[in-house]
Length: 187
Image (cartoon, rainbow, N blue to C red; front, top):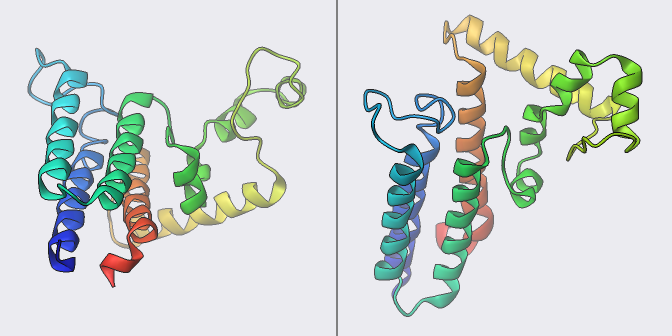
């Protein structure tokens, strides 16, 4: 298959996944479809993802390596859609974009719980186990990150919700994932 056709297929899949990430905020974190109360959101999103799988299978027939990478990203996106937590991404995406760590619920728990309760959780002395226990550097990096975001929001009168800020970071992450996995095709 010619390089241009593979490149087009990759960009087509990216565009479709970008659309799925792009409805995070308006669907209430994939909990409902606006204006369509009777629609099952899981079924709706599964159909969207199935269409993307068919795009990969039809456009990349005979290109197993590229198709396999795209199916992996589709699986990872589906995990995000169905996770119902923030950031709710696979570890690989957090490795590619460590800014996703700034959205982990551990930061909220640190504020909500008293110090001793959080310390017990951190030490594994409770039934609650987090995927992240922030250190001082991560706490400071997160504070700086959100200060910059809120400053930009205020300067540009963006009025982005926290869900929108997260959605924007997920869009950036998706872009980084594609750039990471398809460097040779996107040059």
